[in-house]
Length: 296
Image 1: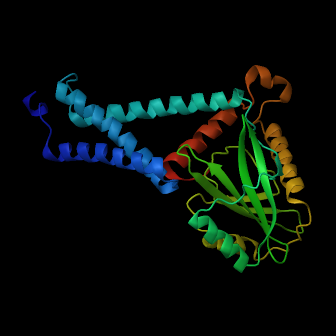
Image 2 (image 1 turned 180 degrees about the horizontal axis):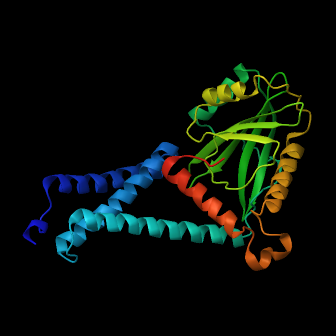
Image 3 (image 1 turned 90 degrees about the horizontal axis):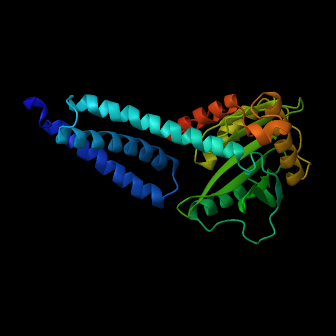
């Protein structure tokens, strides 16, 4: 009993470090839109809550167990809490009116490209590579939420670049982008760095590679070029709005047929996402939140 009354110096330093890092990364995450900071913040919060609570319980003598055992219990407890919260959020999304496959329209608001240094650098890089702006778009998610987007096309008309400007909880504007090309055989190559959970299925002729950690447009473009280097590509002639909305309809149809979405006539009673689909989204959320890895 006496040996459990006080923590070893290492254990105390470990607890203070976990709690301190959780505070530091929490503050950083509220000010900076960064996948790296977001992932580190979640791990630091998990460790800080688990071992901070374990320290309080151990110090008060409420549980007659070694500190590391108590810490492990709280660690697993936080896992359960996060799982329950994520599952409830997915269920709420399934029954909400938010669009799972939002349609695009032309952006006539005059607000298109945020004046951020990184975004200006991306725009300048696109110009140097011969990409020209084709259209500014708005995706209507619902509840008054709109995601701005701009589409560019390569000089040879065989590659399209799309950037999405995503509003963040801290008031900042996050962004992610994609390169896409189509082959003569009908295969669609998509290379993106989207960090938003999807969890659904893609049509058989789609070849999608998602690299959430690839925040540099140059490196993502190189990956896309390597993927299409041996493919015989066709020109992009369709209007970006028509093409994107057709893609959204195709994705919706694919996910209905694959069992990710509930049939339309049953959605009012059961929600829009099947139980298998909710599990896939839950898994995608966890992988993105704690590892920055997409299941795509």
